[in-house]
Image (cartoon, rainbow, N blue to C red; front, top):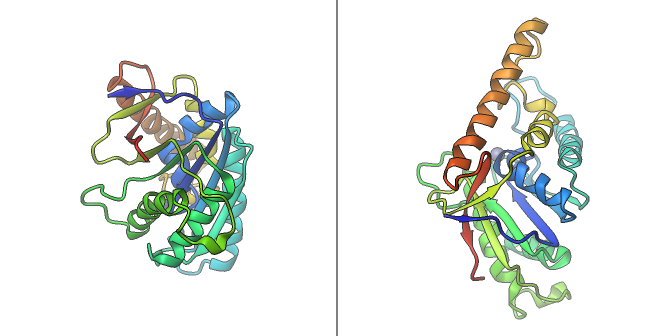
Length: 245
Ligand SMILES: [Zn+2]
């Protein structure tokens, strides 16, 4: 188990939906932001399926979730861009067109480290997470070699490392001790997801809402502690590290 990459100058986190990046690597991004890293987000889908209410205005939900994603990035201290590719939630593919877009943003933003979903996590249900993971991996390949997509007219760019969150076989930990609060603040910024993703029912009475929030926070902090034990640190986020790009 390796511990802590050198602080990157630029990090790019690629998530399927608004909130995935904060769950997967929010504390790591908060730590790096505090140390001066420019942190960018690329969100592949529009998040329009992120409600359990059949009557939801999904166009309005898309706008809401973009604002929430920007607020979450701000809560992490991220100073970079939030790019929304806008593919329909639940229908993301990892085809050439999507790979073109991810490669474009890697070339444009020139990250030292790219972070994304592990596309090879076994028994994963959500296809968007699998496809977004493949796009991070295959986008790096296309971005680094000059003969891929030459019409982009951008210099090719080879990141130094790729960190896969939700890793099937984690082999790397980032020590995030002290950054749990920033991760939690960023997760809470995704307010439209409190019920469906975080089991916080804001329609309940205030004491019950407070209890549900505390229970969610406890689960997140417990997971940071659990991942930290893999590398003998108090709080950690674990990844599969691909360093030979
Ligand atoms: Zn997701």
